[in-house]
Image (cartoon, rainbow over all chains, first blue to last red; front, side, top):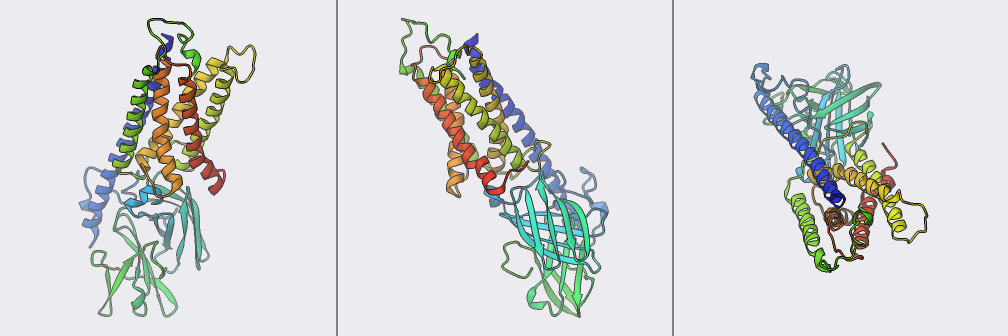
Length: 237
Length: 192
């Protein structure tokens, strides 16, 4: 009997691996379902965000559709999957925040939809996120599909926990070439809501809504292209 | 995971002479396991995430500490094995076999969540030398480990086989530790 012990060891290892594997597959299925739900609502909600078209299978994803989707920092081999976006409200809901990361490089935009805003960029790797900008900073940790930390914009500071979000949720900014016409930035929340701030004659105010499908905003009859934030863009943020 | 699990080894069995032929099946299994892990790691589209263990700041730190635990236990393995083979004189060491077996089992079990996360969330990768080495060693480790367990359970195995495979398992695990957890500690600092 005794010489069978090594075989039992191997078997126990297989059982542990099997259980973990099953949990992982379950998790993947959940994530896929959530992402599908998020995409569905996002497209349905794009023009006017009607709350009634949310898929019945899932609870209303207005707060966090891709909630249980633990995703990484787009680093390592996972980078082949592309960019990871996190979006949501800060604790208390006074401001909105979106973070986009690709291969350890991250950018973020936080704003209150009225006058406080900050564009930030930096690194997101090994469980830590550290972003800086002229108007603020963001530090925190990530893992399990969410980023947790503190963000500062101007004189305001908030704690936050934001979760992974499916496109078109993310961060946007009016094209650099037409910022004379419109200089605005937005967070698009997982439920499709746009929260943005524009700068006009040195004053900050609420940004006008833009068309998330055509990615344009119309200002005084001029169509201004709106660009999705990308950590690999050389400048502009 | 110890020579004394092969209690049959010292018994001379004329009908079953010690021959390297007994190693054929374990080595084939090793090749199969290593190859299968590599193929799975390459073909399965990495998800970028996997189930997390509570209490740590990120999945990465969980892996780092489990890998460190496995490595520390592997050093216990090396030490107890050396004593059992008489390379380190230590008297009244009848408990050593138990320590060797259980530290080995623990190390193996501790390594599984780490390996599963690697395979499921990241996959077999080769974008730099460290990562390629780590991917290769990971496949190699479970292959040789399976072979060693099979050899332990076999009768009439040549005396050099266990130290050889034990040594390979230890070397592979050490290499895995250096290319992952040690790399993490030196580049990111010690974190929980």
